[in-house]
Image 1 (cartoon, each protein chain N blue to C red):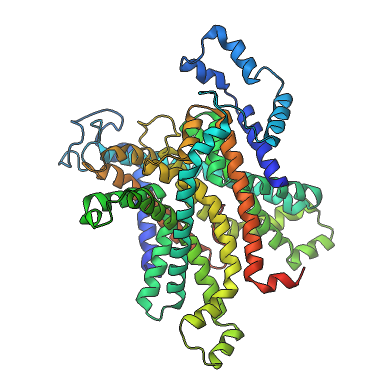
Image 2: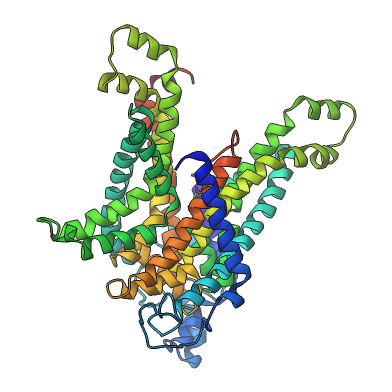
Length: 297
Length: 269
């Protein structure tokens, strides 16, 4: 909670002290006439001392009031809420893809008895961490619009283009880190005594033995996924731009380019909240999965 | 890709890019900013990679792009590493409330994902390439400071540092003569990983148009403007995209190599 508060404060002062008055850009775009300037500044509260502005910002935050957009004068919360649904869809689908791809690649690279498959999986997960989302997005679009792949039955449906492809691109970017962690943990747990014990009890090299090895690794994987959830927020910005999807990512970019401070500020506050929440959820999930964490404290 | 060959290829690619960046004025055949041919010309003898949507020479733009992109990534990495290491060293060497304050501040800033923090800084300064360099550099300081602090703390726990303390060496003497030189190898490996992150961060922000000027011959901006002609001239987006990807992958490969026993993951949080 304290962390989120400091982050919010940081956001407020970074935007205020960074120089540049939001009314400059309003003037430049002819949205405000010079003679109205003083009145507009007063209505936005910009004529007050910084510390008073900060106080009223915090008071507003407690009432879930993030101020109004400088451009269309609509409440920031409404502007963000309108764009939230498509981003939530994309981020959820993307996280799902990241977990599926990450687990799959990680297990394959640590567990496959075929050298080729293991090396291939490791190679793909290295690729996933290195390729910029913008490039994978463009490659995916090209692949589906130039090759016959796009004409497969079902591939022309709105939701495949609209959600599946962006989610795959977004998830792929996060899958590399997850795959790496799964690989490391599985390789390490293989030499643990409980694995020899399980083998001695007659568990074959198969799904049951894999679960035996994977379970102790899950807490780490879960906390990594929580980190990736915060990272996904940044990833959606690019994915939405590449696929021309509406969403809060594009809202963030346009609010920065227009210097619409209240909206940018609201979105950064949202990002900090999502991060803090995902940490809490990850911690309780880890407790649920791993009995070793429950006993101690 | 297996060990040796991968490293050799990575070094070859990075060397080639570096030459490209240094010798851009000699290697380029046309002015990267002026239209010199009809728009969207295919590859020809005088223009091996064709022209872009405004008739500018793609080859020359890529060459100058190497210069601009690498310089931006190097500058912002330097910013992160210098400020981050100083903060990390101050925290590790002094302990007590200085340490607690620095760690608390870093953790709070880390609640904002690195790239969003960078975008916040661009928002504060106003969109330009300088703002992007500053933003990516400063945005990564909290993460790097925390990693650097951990590295310095590991050195501080070694017996010879304790011994020199027992012999009467002061805190800052130990910081300068023990912590800094002995943490150097780990810091260098962190820096390598971070460079790849900075390159990705910078090209991502310029891709989003946050460098302000879309005519800049910079790989991220070129990737963005190439998007408009994805179907009729896919090379306009693919070439700068591949240049970014190969450079990042090559740096990763060298980072993995040098981080034999060190930490990995960079400051992507």
